[in-house]
Length: 433
Image (cartoon, rainbow, N blue to C red; front, side):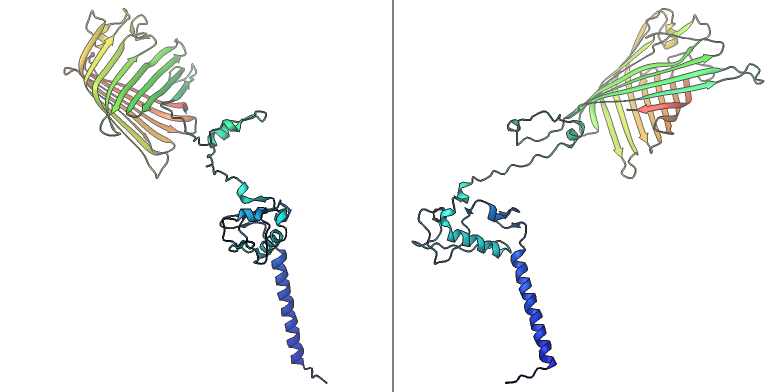
């Protein structure tokens, strides 16, 4: 019998062989390549080869109806609570993802070797899930545990939570040192003399805040020294001042029931004209202002458009204020400081307003202003202190300081009347902390 072989028959035969080869290779891939781990709803197959582990029955695989299990086997005892017959056990097949090869192999091993199964999943106690404690990043950065220290983990509270320590006291300050030097030769045609000026400004803030209570303290010390070529060192500006206010929150975060205390004096001797005629000395005069049963308004804001731009405004109104002046040096004339002749102190009752405004425009420019008003309903004291600071670098800046006072309790000047003016333009070191 002869067959007719054509080109079409050869092509069809070749395509059938290719298709069968591809199908066989695909089947081999499904058998040999098994995922490293398969996660199902109720169980996890580890990356370790399960055939190398101790045989353990998990109670989730079904058996052929032709299999008879010994009554004393672990497999039979484990699934006594499932539907069963005298010698035939059956459950629903638990499909492990896409690993039919593992499922069939494991089921076949259990069914053919029930006497080798010595453990079941019921023997394993359920592991209690413990919530993980979030690490303390700050402590891990700044605190290093030595390697030779052994930590007893049994003493660690597993339910502990990190609670940051609240700082109720906040300390900050600034240090400024300005230096000016002028050197003129003896034959300078326009005249003049060489001089050296030093200006020191030291500020410190010690503030307390907890719940409804605020307690703010400000300490300020200004000292300027002048030295001419043919003269001794003289003290220019000398001011030591403290201002404290205590407040209890009233209506909201901006209003407080408050009391304040201000102490202002100097630390060195000052003279004018004749060196033996002193105008002031150590704690002479000393001025104390105490405002009680007042109200304080505080408002501050930061701008989202510029992270450096911010302002802070405080206004402290004291309807009842006690102002006292003291002179402890007998060489100083009391009348120069508004005290009656022959007396060493003076006490006035009145009202006062203290306010402070601080504004940071940008990283370089900042402005601050302090205003004080006191009256005993016969005389008036007004102080206005203004600072404009332009930072050139992180540690150097140019500063313009203007301090104006109106005090009609002192002797009237022929040119300025009751006004007093102090102006300083300086350049130097400036540091905030």
